[in-house]
Length: 240
Image (cartoon, rainbow, N blue to C red; front, side, top):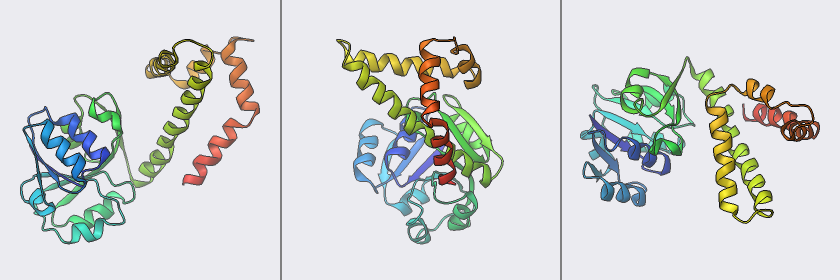
């Protein structure tokens, strides 16, 4: 597949790392030159061009621009009617992105996470799941959404990743002051959370860790009494 990338930042660079060994011919824009050069140096099938060169040589194009600048950047480009666009732009709906790339068609919007570079990450997407699955599905889990309203809700909900990471970081700092190997302590915590939540529903895990008087129950009840659940819900509501 001939794939182009307009807007080569951290997230789109991670997406390219995740598919670069799958036999595609990939052309990345010279915008964000550091990421573009690193990709071209790492893979023989990745080359760099200006934005119009990316469009001219691609059948599928990833849009990874900041939504505020996208109309000006895309308005200067000449797309073809046979091209399919996958947008990574969180600040523009699939319909808005589609209007910017005519006569090409924006067929899917997806939000990659940095882990897409190695695979094993969830991909929330709206639009054509077949195309997203063809490109990314071999190593990642695709979560199709029915409309822009669902995408907006998922975008809010995925923000829980940062607070969870902060909790792990703060716990690792606490643990690191009490053990000889701080790095091992954090690695343990990351593995603990990832392994136990990967195959177990959260409600079932809470129930399993609800031994009366146990460490897990005592800490959870302390945090709930401190308003953690209300703070989380309030923060999510504020993102809508």
